[in-house]
Image (tube, helix red, strand yellow):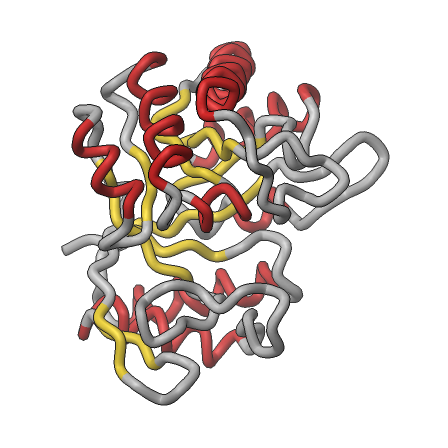
Length: 251
């Protein structure tokens, strides 16, 4: 089985730079491009889409709560109908910018607090699935396995693509350690590379309590804003290549 590597990119805003997108795009196979609600702006998004196209990397819409100040990492109790419209808006905006850059949006990935909320929040998960289905039911959605959003994606006729996280610590139930807790982010390149190789070859990861958690990932995320993100992504790709694990997009 091939493994897709995805990364959050396009998160710079105006005069502020976030991450080294050009370097990350030389390593990954899918690019989660910020749609302007948690980070990014039109110029950044179009430039990032063009860079992804030049690198042969698929573009995905990285949709979020409308929370620039909090980088999309704060839960918002948004009315489901409003959330649907906001996700439709974000996908549509990136579709236009991607087309202008010579590429297209190939999938959707919720960001931050929205991603974590729809693991268990039925109304918001249904709202996100409804938004994707309304824009293009052919767009896959990246999800954690065994979650409410995976169920709602199936119910809406969408294709959920299960992902794992290279640089985030896991709880015993297979969810992610909240960023507010110590040790939530794994930043040592070799440790991250070893984790991903184990995910790809054994389908498991060690949780924070030392237990073994099953992961059935088709795609693995390397966060573009993690300290040393380029070194981490490079180490992950090198480890997979050295082990003979094919790295390719999930489409």
